[in-house]
Image (cartoon, rainbow, N blue to C red; front, top):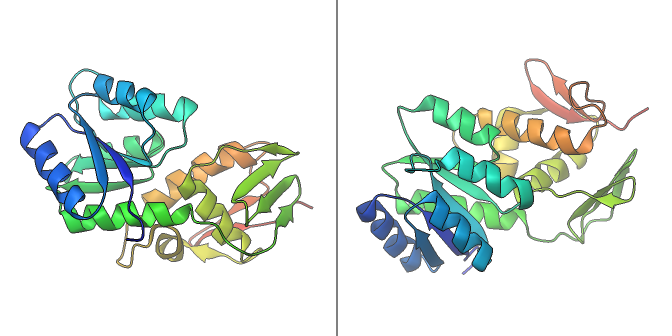
Length: 228
């Protein structure tokens, strides 16, 4: 099955954790679980999951702090589980480094689709390399270097850069990028795009607050420019 993954599920609610584990296993995934952020971080050190499904409202170390700690050393994809009413959770979670989020109560088909979409972002391509100033994108190897040094990008950050680089100089709307990168076919959450652009700029731009490569097109979205 395409997109099958080894998942680490970090969720403190026993019933929710058991239900999600069973549902994701039925979808073909291998799942290990943790009831707390501390236990989740321990399992992450001991094993190597493909992706982390992370509840925001954990006791002790909450989901935001878990996400931040993971991002200090690892670029594994992270999908947040959040309550519909907690809008601020989405913003903080994305700024902490999450790739996507799913609203509780979680529908297994939705979560499974998000997991498979994230896994597809890391699939290799056959196109040639492309250079944008000091940034070189090797599509076959799925790597990006800056001044000869490989950058540590999450699969989502890499896919975003790949999609922008396919259309240099062309403005892409946030909704276009949601479809191309996140595979959200509905009127999705543009904060996913903005947060990912912010994180990507921090890695590829010389001065992220004054970007020369990934430009904001006011009222539209973003475009990739080659530095002059």
